[in-house]
Image (cartoon, rainbow, N blue to C red; front, side):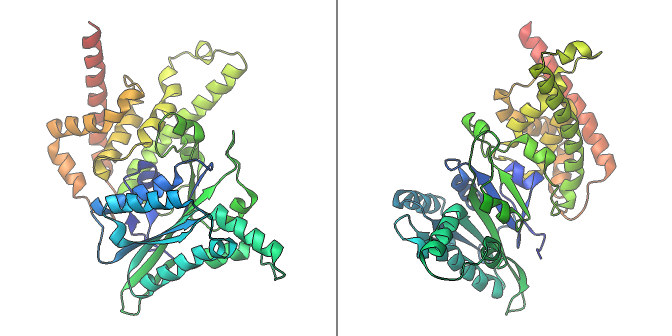
Length: 382
């Protein structure tokens, strides 16, 4: 079970589409050189400025499995620079530690998280990364004459540690896991066989896309993952209205984008077959991809409004390069036009849904914002 109490990350793909909650089991999959560690470290660092961060009751455990000593030192230094090292236990089983320690490292992190949970505190455990643990498991089973449990049993032993319990002091404690896992890479980001087994134990997992990372998008989540993925059961009620409306536009334009791509491969001009200009609809998913793969520099409610404006306007008049400033432009527009609305949504309780009349107001503002952008572009061209 989980508390449904969110761990805000400032990564839009998590906070809006696949939120982390205390007591949950989450995964980040990616090819071996993808910045999975960077994602985990960003999440830990961003807790220091999160509104709900409780420094006395929230702890972090970073388990390095099979890393080089240089990489371990970089992780520790990064935590020190962000002033989160004093809140983090780092478990190190470097590449020279051997199979036994590689196998035991995740279990060590689990037992530490049990201590915090059973004493009414909260912990986030990063397992970086589980492919090294699996290799150690296979090596030990091969070279030692011992009973070999199935990989399902091994992952069950690790991941069943995470959840929510009533602590000894009467307070509810939780332990949350963020499992970082290597994929085989390549065109389809194929999962290794053991990863397929692991995914059955996770509440949700996000895949890092090699092509997006090559275009300097961070964390590099493909829009296809968000559109076709299973909706999170842990969505905040305050977020739900935004999420539903954004996803509706995203799915419709993504289907059109996929059909246009297929038509191009067949040598068909889909625009000639249509009675209306659909170029903006076709290009929207890729533009939105750039908007999602950003750190949120503003509070969650501002990022939600910006994404809603984007879904209403299809980002007409915005280039991918200019999207870095999109949230700031929306915030500036609302501060000038409707500061009281920003204040209302900033104070809105996370456990209450946004009423429809507010979305009607936002829809009107989104249209005005889009028209203002087009007017500015036309003025520049003159």
